[in-house]
Length: 488
Image (cartoon, rainbow, N blue to C red):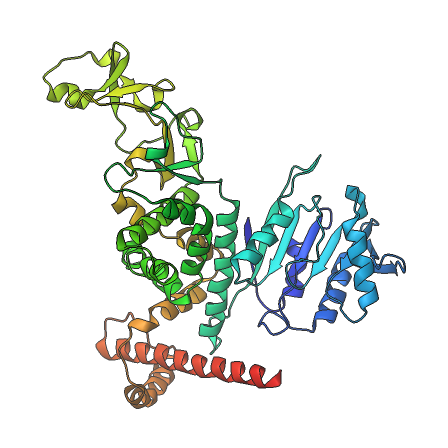
C-alpha cells in the first residue's frame, strides 16, 4: 500500500512509481476527471513513451511490444483503445489464455480492467486518482492479490494530485485529494485480515474462537441472525459509505473534533437509512460491529498472544494464580481475602491454550480468550474492547498522518482551512464589506490575513478570505459540472 503525491501532470510522475520489472495494471483516470490532462488515447501513448520505444503491434493478438530503456522487450495490453472492436476482442482472447509469467508485462485500463480475464501474475496495481465504488475497489485490489507459484509481492499504489496551496480553487483540489485518500482507506479495508462475526450463543461451551472471529456477546442483549449476516456481508460497504462522504472526511481530520462525535451520528444515520426495518437495538449492534471492524483493521487484525512482541504493552493486563484445574484473577483473590505469592502469578499473555478462568464470586468458569488487538501503541484483549474505545476509532487517522508528512506547510494549512470552513459563521454581505480591508492588509503587510491571529480584526479578515475562496470554488465547481453535463 502506498500513496504518491504529484504536482503537474500524472504522466510526468509515472516514472517515479512505475517499475516495469513488476507485472503491472495501470488504471488511468476518467477522461472527465481533473487528473486527466490529455485524452485517453494520448495517455496510453505517453505511458508507452515512459516505458521505452514502440516496437510492433501483433496483428493476431493485438498485444503491443515495447523496448524498455534497458533493452528488455515488454508486452503491453491496451484496454483503453476502443476504436476497433476487432482489436479489443483479440486482446481479451489473449488475456484469457495467459499461461505463464512471460506472456504479459503491463496492462493499461481506463476502468477496473473488468474484461473477464484473470491475471494471477499481476504484482502491482497503479491507480491514478480515486474510485468511488466499493465493488470497483475490491476488484482493483483483487487483481494484485491473486496467488500463483513464484509470486512473492503484491502492491497497490495510489497516485494522488497534490494541490497548490496558492490556487484559488484549492477547495476543489483538496476535495479531490480527500476522495483519493478515501480510495486507499478502502483498499486497506479490502486488504485487512478476514474478520468473521459470530454470536456467543452459537458457540459450544468449550469452543475456542478462530483467529479472525469477533464474538458478539448476546448473553444479555440478543443478536439476530440478520444482524450477524449484515455485519459479515455489508460492513465493508457501510465503512465505504462513511469515509466517502466528504463532510465526514472534513470532520474526521479536524484535530479538535473527537471521532466519537462523528461515529455516534454519521454511521448510525447510514445504518438507519439502509436498514429501516431493523429495530433501534439491531441498528446499534450493526454500528458497534462496524466500528469494531474498523478498530481491528487499523490495528492490523486480531493477534494471538504467541504473536505479540516481547515488549508488548497490554492495556490493563491481568495476572492469574493457578488453583487446581482453574486460573483465578489475582484481583478477585485479594477481594476474597486470599493471599498468594507473586512468583506464582501468570500474566494474561502467558496463559496456556484453553485455560479455564474461574470467577470466585459467582463460580462461573469460562475459557480465556488470549487474542489481542493493537490500539495505538498498546494491545488490548478482545474481551475488553469496550464501547467507548470503539467509538473513538478514526478511519482517517493514518491517512491524515501520511498526508501531513508528504505535503508542505502551506498546503497542509490550506487543507486545514478547507475542513474548518464550515465552522465560519459569515454572510456574503459581511465578506464583501471586508474585501477592501483584506486588499489593504495585503498591500501593507505583504501577506494574507491569518485566521489564527490574536488581533480580532485580522482574524475576521482571515476567516472572510477562507469564506470567499470557498464560495468561489463552489461556483467554479458548479459551473464545471453544468458545462460537462450539457457537453454530453
